[in-house]
Amino acid sequence: MKDRKKTKVVQLQHPTGGSSDRTLKKNIEPLENALQKVRALQPVTWHGGVHVVQLERPTGGASDMTLKQDVAPIDNALHKVLALRPVTWQWKQPQENEPALQSGFIAQEVEQIFPDMVQDGTWRDGSIRKHLDVRDMMPYLVEAVKEQQVQIDLLENRIKKLAK
Image 1 (cartoon, helix red, strand yellow):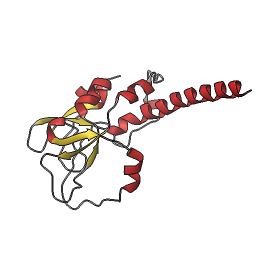
Image 2 (cartoon, one colour):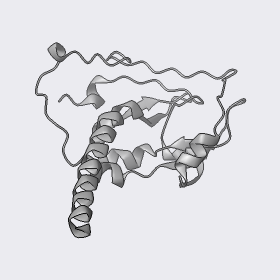
Image 3 (cartoon, helix red, strand yellow):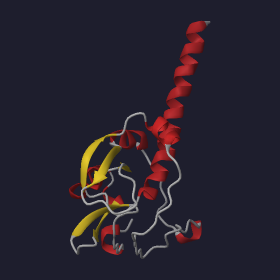
C-alpha cells in the first residue's frame, strides 16, 4: 500500500468539514447517545463558506478489482473501531451560518490507530493542519460489525445450549 501522506494533496478551508485538527476546536467532549442525537438532527443547508479538498485519487473511490493489487482482508477491525473516540466540539473560530455543535473525530487521535487515514493539509490561514477523510473508515466499520455479529452468534448458541 502506498503511503498516502506522500501521494495525497489536500487543501482545506473551514467550515463544511475541513479539518479534524485538535487545535482548531474547543469544548471537545465524548459523543454520548449518538443514535438519539442523529435522529434529532435536521437537514442543514450551507449559505456561504467554502470547503475545498483536492485529491490526487478520485473522490468517488474507483473500486474496480482490475485497478487493485495486494488485496487482503482487514483483521482486528472491531478492536480498532472500539479504540476510536467520537466527540462533539465547537470551532474556535466559527464561520457564519454553520451549526455551533459539530461531531466527528480528532485527527491526531485517529492517526494513532489508522495512520494512513490522516494527512497534512493547508488550512485557510496557510498553516499546516491534520485532515481526516472519514470515508476511509467505512471498510473497517463494516468488518467490525461482521466481527461483532460472529460474537453475537456464538453467544446466542451458548444461550440456546444452556436453555436445553
